Amino acid sequence: MSCVFCKIIDGTIPSTAVYRDDECYAFTDIHPQAPVHVLIAPRQHIVSLAETDADDKELLGHLIWAATEIARTKGLSRGYRVVLNTGPDGGQTVDHLHVHLLGDRPLGWPPG
Ligand code: 5GP
Ligand code: ZN
Image 1 (cartoon, helix red, strand yellow):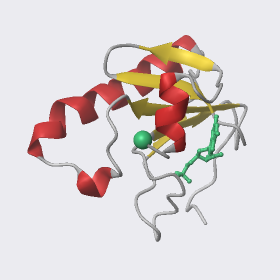
Image 2 (cartoon, protein in one colour):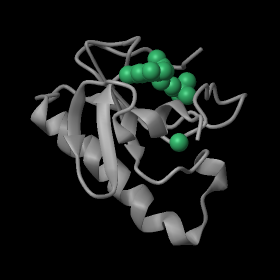
Image 3 (tube, protein in one colour):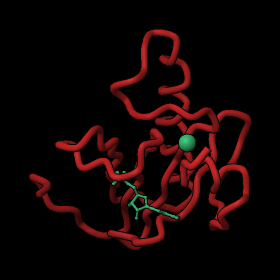
């Protein structure tokens, strides 16, 4: 398996852990776009949101819940952004489903 996030999840590639449970692993982004920039990835290799189906509804909810818990832990009381870049036009560069949690600065809208 050549997937960089699978290697991060199995520990082959080092990362800074933020949260972990049986379903997901969360770690700091190597090129942070905000003071808090955490990636939450399922332990299961799923390419993107576009590859999910009804069987993944619970897992998808879990990933968003994990992002919310991490935001609380980080004290992001002024708000934050949760993003799932999907496919080439969505700006996805790593083909393993992941949720971005960005916060601790005002974030502009619309995105580029
Ligand atoms: P995407 O562009 O697919 O939505 O997000 C991929 C993210 O993964 C990018 O923000 C990028 O900085 C991050 N990333 C890519 N490779 C690594 C890595 O080896 N370690 C960590 N911690 N983050 C990575
Ligand atoms: Zn993977």
